[in-house]
Image (cartoon, rainbow, N blue to C red; front, side, top):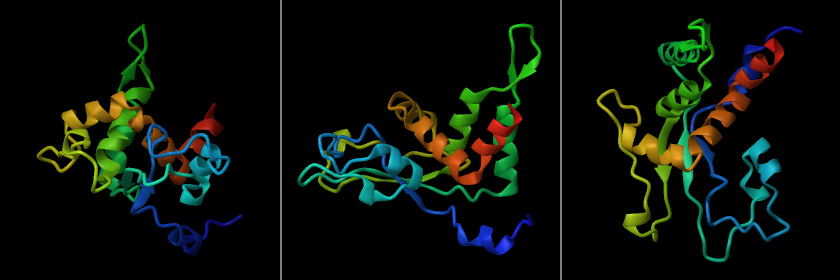
Length: 162
């Protein structure tokens, strides 16, 4: 089968809006909430929300420049095993994907300012350590990384090699 550039162009990876599994606006008691279906499609219709509650959206741009793609791949290869031999460093990789891909956090307007996740960047325009620390604790880094792998095909290629 040939690679068809027109098919690739149809699938924009800019402005990918995600809701985290830890968002307390999700109504987990509703039969209309199907997290697995949502995670596979990012179709908000697969989630039900508590009455009057609005979720927080994490807006990502997975259409990375070649320079950023290279930097992410370099993070993957910087690990060392117990004998000092090069190995994969998945922990660093997921953080670097999030640092470079997360472009905005859309939080409900009625959210208490003390409860807002700060969106702060470093001098290079990527997420800073403070914001990354919060996202790590909430496991949002891993959720963004999982969607990056699913949407860019990285996950499929990784599984094919194993």
